[in-house]
Image (cartoon, rainbow, N blue to C red; front, side):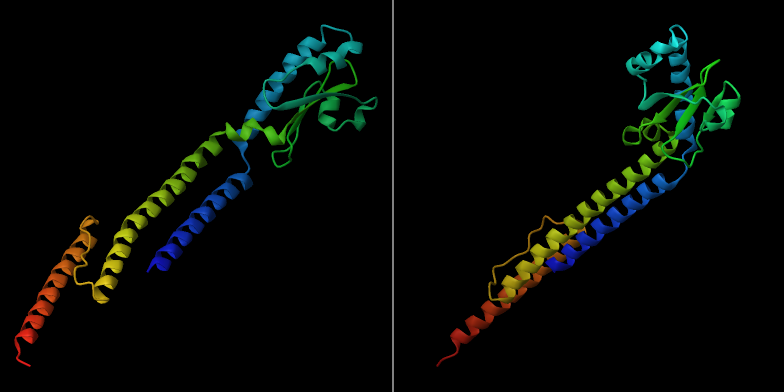
Length: 225
């Protein structure tokens, strides 16, 4: 009996782990346009803020300014020079003083901006191991309740199974004692309603059997030898 409930616990736990892993897998494999939009918006804002500071100093001091610049999000910014615009990572950025960004399915995400009237480009990249855009995206927030429901459901099922299994195991132990000759063994009556009714019926049966055995012993004792 105990092994059956143990296997049930293990099966429930495995199902909950599988459901959790599947949910995380779906979250990780789904192109997150919301997080992508947050990254682009943050990157453009940080590049504009940095570019404002760079245009106030000479080009010789740009590296020092970038080194001291601290982005608000988990972003990394570096300065690059391409004497031939055609060699730049993006022809779009080379042709205009505009932004060029990686595709949504390219990781890590990056954004490139050409500095005005120069061959210098600012490259801003996400830091994957500390990426705040996934965690703050509406898509991820939609999956958090699903994961929470799976976990709560698993805990609830485990608690319910435990509430049912413990009284059943207690009743089984009492029945074993009674079958071994302990006629005074009685089932506890603190179980949930269905099992409690079964325990009451068992106790009534035990009382009747105990009375029958006592009557038989009296009858046997009354027979003259």
